[in-house]
Length: 192
Ligand code: GLN
Image 1 (cartoon, rainbow, N blue to C red):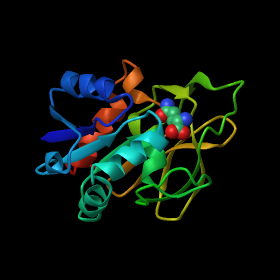
Image 2: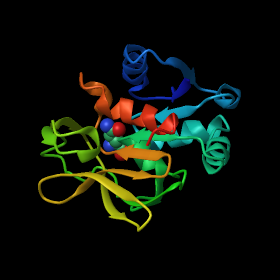
Image 3: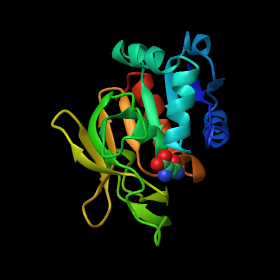
Image 4: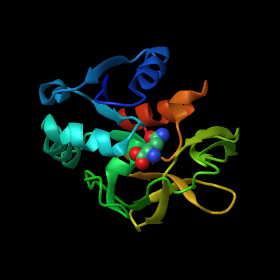
């Protein structure tokens, strides 16, 4: 199995480190030709405005759209989730428009730019998952084909899946808990 991590900007090093711990062959992706032959792709957190500009500038946007439409599994975390969305309540970013969710950027306001909270994510088992939120977006709406995987205590949706696409508003790569990445690899392998 070979997983690419989009390495234009943001927290790609941390995703690569987790994939190494899971003993998966990993490739940083900056150019369209590096997308060839991948079994899955991770779009990391960072600054979605910058990532979307770099993706357009390096001709990655349409390439990734086409591969996803042909079934390439993609995990988007935080800014990566913003980029997966079909719709944003923000016009500075051109999303890939792949997952049927409406996302609001920087949704938690300045005073709580960042926080940590335990999340219940039933597909990962009973043990709570450490949710690390950094200037996080939220999912305002998830349409009927989208499965909600996790919510905050107040009901806000923070992780979703649609087919082979997986999205989180939080940063699983900044924890020591490998289960979210393992779940993505299980999707890639066709086990769930
Ligand atoms: N606030 C960032 C954005 O809107 C996302 C933050 C993150 O990825 N940690 O792009």
